[in-house]
Image 1 (tube, helix red, strand yellow):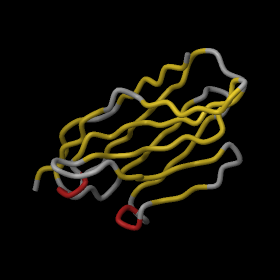
Image 2 (spheres, helix red, strand yellow; image 1 turned 60 degrees about the horizontal axis):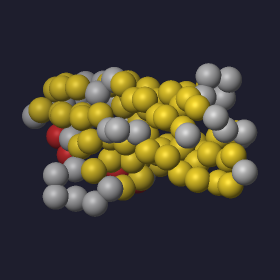
Image 3 (cartoon, helix red, strand yellow; image 1 turned 60 degrees about the vertical axis):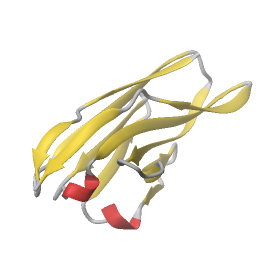
Image 4 (tube, helix red, strand yellow; image 1 turned 180 degrees about the vertical axis):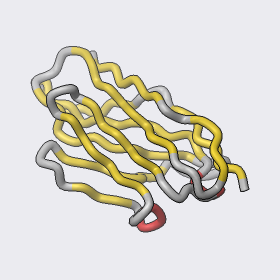
Length: 118
């Protein structure tokens, strides 16, 4: 079993910054990719940013230039640095990890609320 523990959400004014962190623990051979998704009120869950074990990154168009994803493979941790936040970034942010242990499987964190006030 794999656990993902997120931290760093909160309330911030527009233009401000927040840093989300997610640490994976449990039994696995390796973590293939890690990423952050978000689900705003009345919206579907969407990919915000992802990063492979090799460091390749992918971002939603709406966050390019403002958010940066990074990863510490030794600590099984993924970080999302969010700058120039906008009210439309308000959502519950979920950490995701694709893990290999005999088979490949995806896991989700419990979610952390990010609220950006105008």
